[in-house]
Length: 299
Image 1 (cartoon, rainbow, N blue to C red):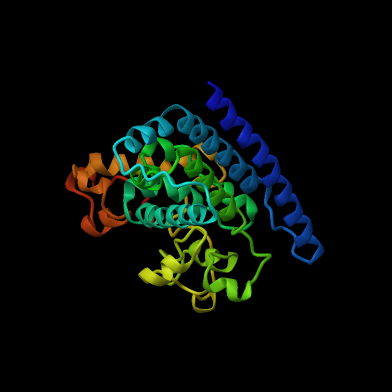
Image 2 (image 1 turned 90 degrees about the horizontal axis):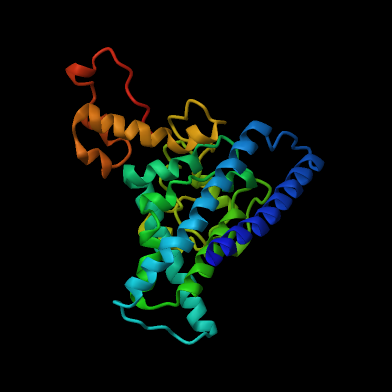
């Protein structure tokens, strides 16, 4: 119970910080001739989905994610390095690499995309967009690739928790159009410029710039796209949700669509293939589905 209370306290404290930053961004944009940066229905949906995500995630970490982490830790290498600059740096880099891999997986596998599509469904870019998350993250198993490799190596679970939360806090500050470029930092770190490309839905922008803190992973694995080479950025996904301001719909509509497709086509591969595989595989509905509406598919 104490771990749950700590998680909720963390949510409340950082929630106030994030809200303060959002207010400051809005004021800054207005003073520089950019009104309308925040649109109330979308901003409220972003805050609501972010709150529901973080509450469920915090409770899940307290109740079973950390317990499973310790179970794996006891069967791993149990490296458990002493606290130092180098061990902290190693953990930060390792956690970010795991995030990169997990992030790619969330774009390439429909089961995990059902969680992540919520974050990409905003048509605008401001700090509230960072909060547009999905409460099913902890329930879908999406966290396994982010947490468990560190357990196998033998990092302390409290260090890992701090590293993951720090990674997420860093990423919050990537969601803005008020910062254009950051000079030489663009070569090493993920920046607002790089992340704007990631949120684009035009062909040159889709599935690019997956890094959390570092952009080096994208440059190493060929998923990098500079903003100058990405064309005009249009935010969102190619098939937008029917109710973009309904927090419940934003978090469950793709799950409903996926299970509807599995039932329709009687094909379990839909669960682990890429999000638009069913469209490519079944270009026309089966006879039983003729005349019915096809499910909305993310891309």
